[in-house]
Amino acid sequence: MKTISVVSAVMLVLVIAFAATVEAQIPKEGSSSMTFVYSATYKALPMGPMGQERLQMTYENMGVIIGDTGNEILHNTSVRCLGALHAVKGATNNSGFCVGTRPDGDQIFWTYQSTGKMGAGSKGASTIVGGTGKFIGIQGSSEYTDSPLRPAAEGTFQGYSKVKGQYKLP
Image (cartoon, rainbow, N blue to C red; front, side, top):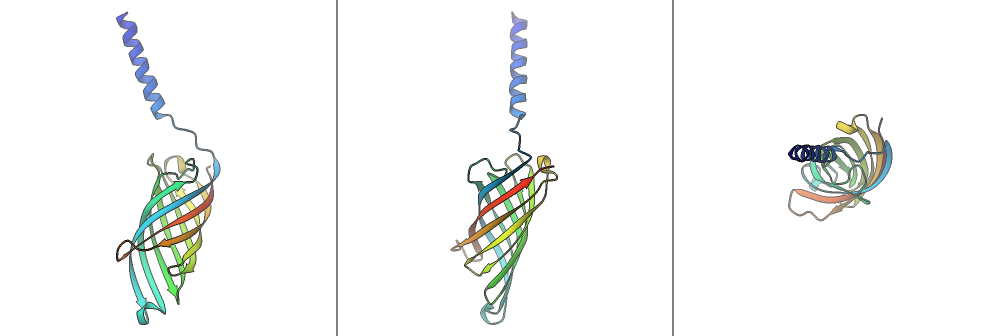
């Protein structure tokens, strides 16, 4: 009887350990609708009186992506982006690179570019350029609308982007 209990206990531990490592399969391709909420710090170099003619800015933003359904591959992903913005008479060109770290530690990398008006938001597109773990070889793209918010502190900016995209795994 003691042997059956020990064997049963070992089997139970193995079943629990195996179940803990099994993940839901990620579909080979899909689409998603998400919101990226972020906060950033920046360095700006105004050119001309009060920066009204031209402005060059570099920034680092960090935030989180929340999927509209909770099933998106980037749902609950932490994001870090480095970017640059150039404005001429208020019209902006913005571009950068982001690393998204999923809850399981796998990462997805993308580039982005947008155009808009200073303080009034922008529209842009991004391209997935790689990933780690389950996302090695991933490809995809998205379109987004960026909405700035009132800064929480001097030298920062905050906002959110509504994103619609698709991806394909090898």
